[in-house]
Amino acid sequence: MHINNSVLWKIEIERKELLMIKESFIFLKGVGLQKETSLWQSGIHDWDRFRESKTLPGITSSRRAAHERQLHTAEKALYSSDAEYFAKLLKPAHAWRLYDSFKEDAVFLDIETTGFYGDITVIGLYDGIETKTFVRGFTMDKAALKKELEKYKMIITFNGASFDLPIIEKYFQGVVPKIPHIDLRHVCSKIGLTGGLKNIERLVGLKRADAVANMGGADAVYLWRQWRATGNKEFLDLLVQYNEEDIINLKPLAELAIPKVWKNTRRIT
Image (cartoon, rainbow, N blue to C red):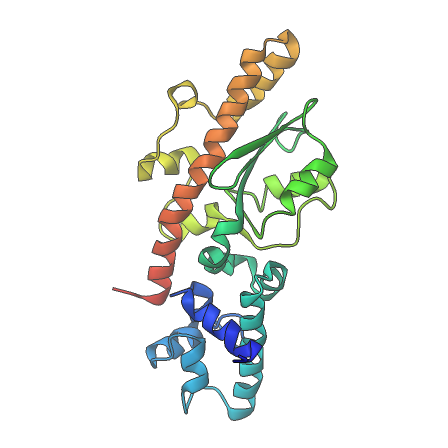
């Protein structure tokens, strides 16, 4: 029996229950947070309900037709896991709504430098299972880094929009793929978790290995300088461990913070 391709991708998408992006309308032209909330309050909870509803509050018939075309395109992109499409579709402030759609193909990223906006010393990547570390003078290679980052459909950082990604782009132009980026610093601030990553970890109960539990960014700079000055690999190993703790802790932080932000956004009780 032949099944139309459009039916197949609709079935596949429906298997993914409660994707935040499928309940979102913020990317539709002329729809802001207030109008999106109005749609939800009217019982239009997701894209399917939008199409099925006879009337849409505050939306004309001509605008509705345009919105439905946008939703159709977005649904096809979602089915095909077209992360670049969604990177263009959503403003960075709303990229967190894509987390449950692309989290299986996300990479958690953090860098260390020689100082504020200085040369990169370490780039750490974590895919949720394993870490991969690029170290200056050893494994840090532009082509290798580019190839590795191209495996993923989403990048997750803490303060990466202001620090990590601009610095990587400064020293390795063209390496960062045009995929959605979630900056957990801004996500956490939406639920009252402010300050640096280490402070937020303490607030939510995330632990670090004893060897690096009390270290901060200045210590990472110190460890690199000591490694270069003495050649003692213990300094470098400790720096890598510190970086690994950064990226590994980003995953549970994302799992904790993003659902809370979504709950507040949807005003779910």
